[in-house]
Length: 435
Image (cartoon, rainbow, N blue to C red; front, side, top):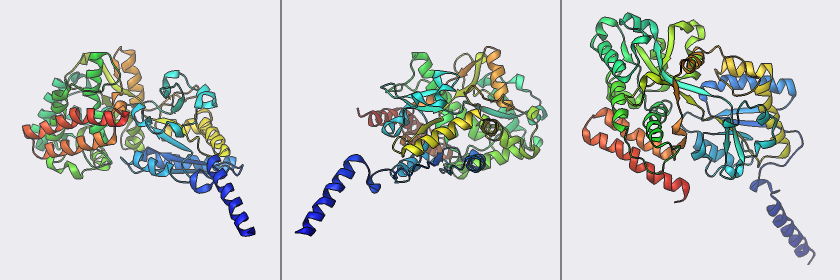
């Protein structure tokens, strides 16, 4: 009888523990009062800089900071797996409204946090439908066509000669026609492996999305018309047919391949962002004045007034299911990153970030400076409409069809790209929003 009573007591305690979330295998780890930080980093290119900053902070404060970087193109899959663990990330990233779906319950409300008070603009927050501040942007970035000005000059042109898609097409095809004479081609490879395909299934795909949204004066759409898909095709054709590799080879090409081709001066143009600046000038590969970033022209809108694609998909979220001490440690860490001399310097110089906080250092990134100059000239930045892409599956399908089209540029294969872009958008949007 005594054993039965003991078992009943244990059972009642177990049920109570489940109800209050204190059983370890069903909740985050117990609060030990010390506090630590586990950051699941989104950006592989900044991994080393984050590791160094974490090590410095831990030594300075005694607070353990662990940085784990997800493989390129695998962040959301990795995040879903990590959030289900006992020792889940205390700090993670959400890319925008579409990826916030299903993650709101993990997001600590940052409305009363110190880092929120340091923001220069309320616009740099990610809110739930109920107004909860789920995320805070930690960097504002720009992307476009990174250009080797010296090679462009050798081909007989300058940056001033490219003010439209028609200009870009004319120059790229002329360089291709003279590639044996010049010793270089127009574009670095458009790799479609996971480390590189986001440049085209996300960043380049932004262009037809942006112009369709702009026409309708909207910020998200359940059903796409695909009005600017022919422009998307024209740019993609230009990229893959005037490149360092044959179109059928892009499935195996990587982000490193494209960067290394640009560093080796094999291609004039390289689609990427302001985050690449540090990689291109490290070890004096290029001087700042030797490279520039041009807008991605697709033959739509007022091209003479078009700026770079500028925005953010980088929102820090603090895991509210972590222990109280871990939440505090994490909030302290990110606030230190954007307010301290050591943190702001690392983010500006080593990571190449433009951070939207009051104590941000003036950037020495030539692409950032160029974006500022475009704005001063009255050019309009292209908004990051791709943050509304409904799912990773949509990108995967687009990746598959773009790659197939590159290998066989038939009308039928482009129809498959169009279906992936338009029909699959509606399907994935409904799945993501429970429609």
